Amino acid sequence: MDKIVKYIIDEIGENFSRLRLSKCRLYSKSKKIEFDFILPTDCYDKYFTDEIKQKMLECLKLNCGSSFLVSMNVKKIYSDVHIIRNSIYNFMSEKFPIAAAEMTPKNFLIEGENQEYYVELRLPSHIYTYLSSANFVDGLREHLEGEFCDTFNLTITEDKSLNTQSELVDLASSHEKIYSPTTVDVEPGRVLVGAEVRQQPRQIRLIKGDTQCAICGKISMFSKRTAKTSGKDYFKFTLSDPTASVDVLLFPRSKNAEQLENLVLDGDEIIVNGDVKDGEYGKSVFARDIMRCKVDWDSVKGFDRLQDAPLYYTHVEPTPYVTVEQDNMFESETVCEYLKGKTFVVFDFETTGLDVNSCKVIELGAIKMVDGKCVEEFSTFADPGIPITEEITNLTTITQDMVDGKPSFSEILPDFLKFCKDAVLVAHNQEYDVKILSRYCREERYKFENETMCTYAMSLKYLPDLKQHNLNAVAEHYGYKNLRPHRAVGDVEVTAKVFAKLAENLV
Image 1 (cartoon, rainbow, N blue to C red):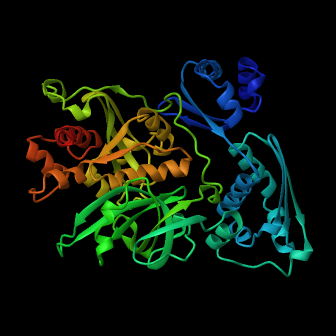
Image 2 (spheres, rainbow, N blue to C red):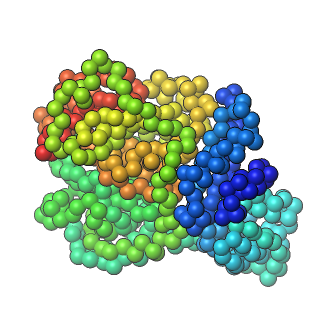
Image 3 (cartoon, one colour):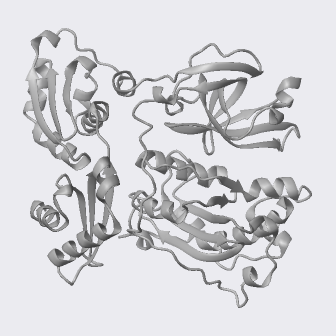
């Protein structure tokens, strides 16, 4: 692998001397080899072009031989002392959890910047003995060289002065305490609902079920709904910070609460105080107090360095849209004014479960609409990395054989983001699909700034007489059938048709 990297650098120039090979995957059955490279952010932004990419790919094909299908991905990487320390801790948490549980800031000495870092871990005697006998330094070096493009000088030293000060702490709280702040700095504004929130808000990723919390962030997907059991109106929206997102529900108990829909818009920054409850789709916060605020996003360190969508496709490329019907309704019907001059991507996931915080994507279907016409399709299976259960197969018709050998959705994500660039994302019950997409983007450090629309919410508003608002019910109302049921692309085709009809109400 070192020879391949050297050969590539010789071909594309010394500007890429810090190019690193992060991962290499060989699929023997399908005769495929996939390479993941990393480049420092400054080098990537300044020098990396489509021409350079093509040269790299040609070098790989030459080295791998004509019998293999070769693909590659190049990811830009940013490094600093804080990010490196987080990476070391994550490595220890996975490989040496006993040692990680005892780490505190005084154990770390990290110096340097841009290309070379000196890392020393000062350890109490029992941890030093444990790690010295476990090939820790070599493993850590391999981990860091796969994550960053820098040179690392690593040492571990025994510090007996720490022997009486080591404290066993909970792993999760240790991570929060040592490596990143747990709270977010805000400038409070006026009270919208309830009382003033005096508690400093925590990062959303840290909230736990059945607890009280104060959190802050930006509003999205704000809607007014009616409870099925009581018939009372309530408000629901998503609150997001750079670390996570969560549903917030408000059941009005006062006149100012009833007017909340007139006081806030998607994109507003607020503080919420309420109770965290675990539900079918993950955690939700039942709000009591809501205030306007101005969030200091710089206080959420380590979570704000996000990548842009890539410049090219690596694993999955879009194909021209071809309907399974004899006549394409998007070609024969008049396009409403709202859709003209706009680009939408209608999408749907099939997953391993309902929890948006943990489920894995096993299939993605998406259709791009430009000026009201369906022009491209983006569809693929994805290997979830866990066995597909009989229950999921019965629900989706997707079997283990269908996903074996496919890339994971984390690997597909950059391609999908490119497909969605500058488009409005549309889904039926978007709070499920959009939250899964947002979670993957956070985990893989990609920007997700697309506007979103929900055909479920639109049907609630514009088709109030329907008894049900699931996709099949709304499609039946307009006379459409799903010709590919229980599959992501089939659902997307129907959603696109439904969206085109509902959009007539937006003119």
